[in-house]
Length: 114
Length: 118
Image: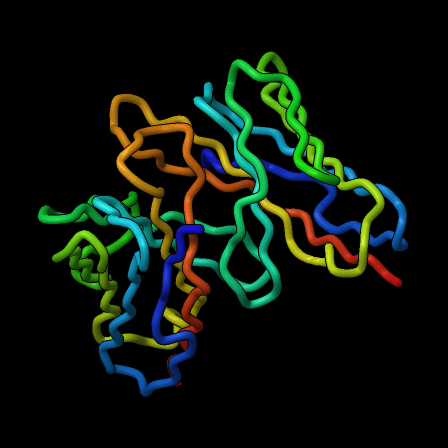
């Protein structure tokens, strides 16, 4: 399987704490994306980092990418109860096919307690 | 922002029934859409790539006669689960990349369809 792996599978923290999720993948990529999924809903795009970028920020989110290790991390700072969701990384490794075909990681279920 | 609408959100039907799921891009044109399947507490698995005006491209192991995909317009793709059985029960999600740019663009996801076959 080409599917990426994420760890931890589940993470439980208190409001105000930081949450770090890691993603490893197997192939060369064009970019890596992080998505959030609330229970029973579709996915919401959080951040996209290109293969030539090493770090990217968006609000309370910080993403790093290490292409030599084929890994990425998502840091959520000062977490809130509303951050409770599943988080997935997805890699775009499409070659000469135009639109991207994403391969999703296994996901991290984050629980933020008030 | 770009919105993808998926309908219905929830279907319960008897074994042997065929079920159609619609995926619409509401404020942009989508020449390509993607269909995923997700089992409880698991990740999304790509089933097929839907191409406007041409045949869909199916991932290995996905039966094209079982999961019929039609992408007849630039804003609508449909997935029909034919002669559904209990093992087809799952959460089906569609997505579409925004606009005509190729690569390095996020995808917009529908809210998913929960299919339960009795």
